[in-house]
Image (cartoon, rainbow, N blue to C red; front, side, top):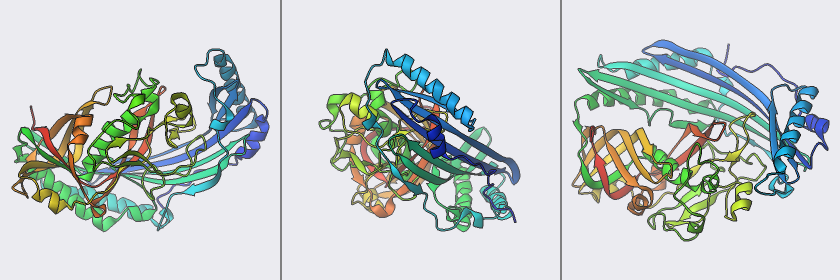
Length: 489
């Protein structure tokens, strides 16, 4: 019986053999082979909507000549194809070396040997295509709890990625990933009112693992809950407006961390490399070690070693070993999101985050797993401390300036907090702030038991643009005196 993973046609390509074809072409040569097979399966209102399979594979050749790095990529994996791409990389590097802004050395490409594999309890091969299709069909039905739900979408994206990197300095490592992104969403209508509710936000449920990720009984129960909440929002009052306490669920902390911590700490932004497309940062080089980014309770880590999180790996794409590093400790900014290249240029401490989205994109400074470390407050204790506030779940909209400083975010679902208790549901909840004052208003952080692990497959950056996968975990967090507003404000 056919299983969910569609195995691509066997390909005989040995990066070590390819490296021998081009050995000596430059002062240093590296090859990164990537093969990625992605399946997208979705049902809307109990009818198939998309059943797609995409296979990509190719190799990127990187060379160093006179202290300058050049790249070229090809999907022609023959000896002649690899040699042509190498000649192109050499030509570009030699040309650009006469006007280079910085001189690099081979130590920026450390020798890396080893392997990484996504954790798994159950092989994806154990999930038959028939069983999986039946599950998505049933999930789309469960979302439509009554006639007011006009759209129930159940979608799963499953990706298998194989990476093999080698270099003239002795690098030889492989990384194999099993990646799942799920989206279960209900859209409800009543008269002129439309409300959307999803399970933790569209495409936020991202994780590495085996077939155990598709916990059918749990997900079907959650789909019914999502449908009922979409209907409930239709007749809810608008979120109130004013300054009050804000309690954010982990699935909204995902975006708060991503936009107001992850992006502004990227060293290539701080150096100005991304200003044309993704923007700069309010953070200055002199802020590291000095800036009080947030309250004493704020501890943020870069952790690609976190088992099962969406952007976990053993090595970044220059071969730098991945390990947990604290970006912010007790509210003080300590470290940036910068690769070995950016660290050398800026003189600032960084992390193993030199990442590319595919074989035909050059690696740049990217987020991986950026996590807010748990604290000591239970959810009940946080609620009990609030006289007047709002609890919000799941992102629905976002806006932030090019310096990642001023922001405005909207959520799908909210409840009022009155005298220490969750009360009525309100719709169209939004809040706004400025990054540093917002994080300094942090007054409670949830316990390890309340941590939610989420992510995004669509973090965009770079020229040419590339969307990469990131992970974020966080407990619920309580902020004081935040500017909150409802729809139309």
